[in-house]
Image (tube, one colour):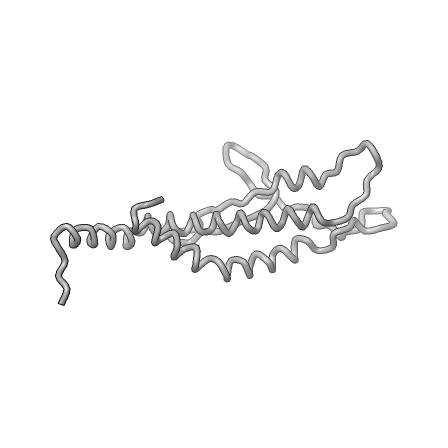
Length: 152
């Protein structure tokens, strides 16, 4: 049977306390969600950049502004429950607020053609769900291990 030295026992108790602390678990959840949000945001930007769009010369594209304004927010809904939102941001009273981006693929009033880029939001909603399912558990475990080892 293996015996631990008093120093090792104390270190083990400290690590267990770090892992069972609810605030540390919340911190790990937030960090893992931020990582997932950054991945989704990068894919969202790529989708907006890839869609063909013609505009008359001399007028800047609004798509560049949409790409720049994409943000990911993690908000606490209740204890140990967080919501990740990715979209275009507007700052209001020191808090960022995510607003809906006009979905391309719509046909403006009296227009002949639809705006290119059909259903980017719907595609990204499905893609974000698959990314979250694939990565959340792994990222959460990795973050908890980092915290248990004393790193942030």
